[in-house]
Length: 116
Length: 110
Figure 1 (cartoon, rainbow over the protein chains, first blue to last red):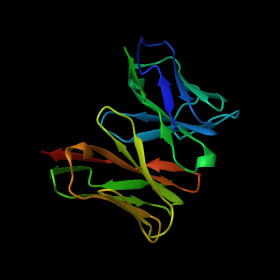
Figure 2: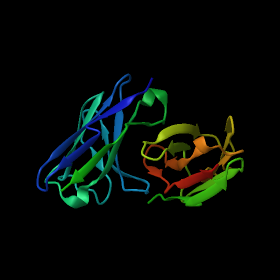
Figure 3: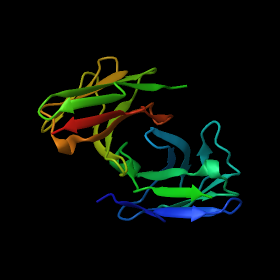
Figure 4: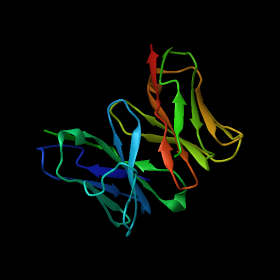
């Protein structure tokens, strides 16, 4: 159990366009979802934390108007990268936590975004 | 803010040798978690330590949580090529912050 999926797994878009990434918990209810960004050979940088039905909490330095996060249900969160630029190219990973199970985060497979 | 450090950054070992990575937090943690990320993959949860001084074992892996709940270690006995990957610790500050360490990248030479 505790499977998290992400869609798409990779996407290429042009500068100035917007890209939406979906994160779904398939077999449990995710009370909290997290969005991370990972550059090659680097650690995961937390971008934002979202609780179902409420606004996301963004980490310092993350532009909330650029990285729009919606957590509309207990099984789905979306990250929209608006007006993408080449420097937004990265590996975006979501994770989900079910508070009834404890502190463990279950990670999705990640989405590789390339902005040309 | 909370900082989590890991050493070493890289470790190359011969298959069969032991390996240890250390994790240190700038603040006291409610719990610490360890994840493994294979090349090209996503982080996979290994274990969570909650109690001061806790020691847990998973086959060849031994995890320790320091008495002050600010540091932790992961020790692998007799490494195998399947152990290759990056090992991250992540410190949870009572739900207020969840910070990943920079990771230790392990290479195992056959």
